Image (cartoon, rainbow over all chains, first blue to last red; front, side, top):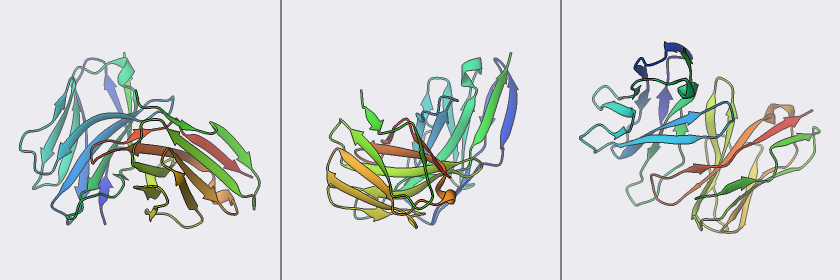
Length: 118
Length: 111
């Protein structure tokens, strides 16, 4: 079974500062993917970034980057130059790929509530 | 754009009622998922389906069943609703490993 741990229930950050949201994971599988989602107060789940377990480069998407440290089983999300609109819940998730093809659903962490202050 | 719709945004039911939550997608996706979201617990997978009439249990299937008679529709069924099933229910769809598009959610209250 997989497990995702997000140790920061809440964070306050000043606007324009960089933010790091922590995520560690536990799995015995070799082939898996790591995801980050944003959930604003409106409730929609917005996909932010993906990292595959065999990817050697850290994933980047605009202001978002994923600091992937496979040996430490960590997949921290970094948001550069934070904005007021970044205030939301952030969820780290993982998905394991089966050797015969196919995959399970996502396993989520408990989330981090990020508040950006002006 | 992918569109995932859920039948109700808010729903109030009584204990013991049979409850149907519907999810419909318009992108011909094979994969559909049901999650529930509770404060402090994140999202947890209830059931998923990779094809019509096919279903797989997720992490917390107890008290729930599902139905997928058509590719575009995936229903979550609470046979006899209980107060501990009060939650936000999120449907997701996708094709392939990387994609899961989420619906807007149904906030269910069981009284």
